[in-house]
Length: 363
Image (cartoon, rainbow, N blue to C red):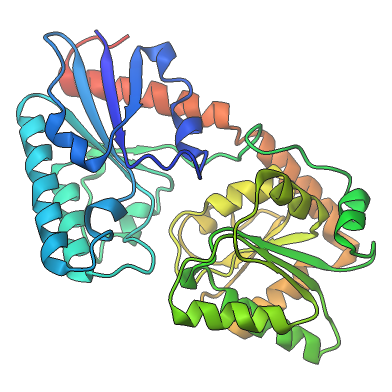
């Protein structure tokens, strides 16, 4: 029997995660294709003997793409109607929870309604951390018997390999003895660039002035624009706000001492896996999936939304006497979190759970 998995939305052109997650599905006779939200209406249940799985990832295109709340509600109702139709025809709904709710979202009540509807309908719920069950409890409740846990991997093989640090720094005009922090990814309010700049000012007041590589694509409101204007005026900050290509990303990660992820709120972090890919110690808030690695020597957690604590975590992470040992610990951890391992765990776990759901052999 063939399993037809149709996933939405397709973010694989900008984020390799979905490509990595599905790379072992074919070996389990799972045929994977992306679909757009609007294409759900054209999707039919699988032919006799086969199985359709509708795999929902981020919910942004369902509600967040609309500025008018009436349009957003119509979109949500249409989406749920098609999900109910397909499940009534024998399809399975799989939901991956990347965030408790979308970052920097509008239409808050509609998003709550949508997430509660997904939690009620999902036949299987894929979580990247076991902490998801508690993290979502205030907004919607998950049936633990439906949960499949497969953690986020590194991005090994998806981006250019690291280059020697001295070479990377030479290309960027950095000195060998500079303390270098990298923050790479979409430049959105929830990612905490403003708080990071505040923390760097606290370090500067104590005579420590690390260099910051701040880069990604700017996505945000006027408050984000003011943060970027502030960053441009700081001599110790290198800012790229129109996106980093893969070569530029590898160059920055290779030149850095540590990676900063000063999220205002977070459940899962792809940036965490990216930092491990390049063997970088990590500074991040003690929240969500980041707590899973709280005891690792390469992780420096601080109380969320505490600027002074962030500054102290940066100071600790940049200590030269332990930096190399912590980089080694990050590289060692990365070996056990490969995309292949994630893909194998996902494909085998999904096959096993689908077999239990349907009572039919699937591979």
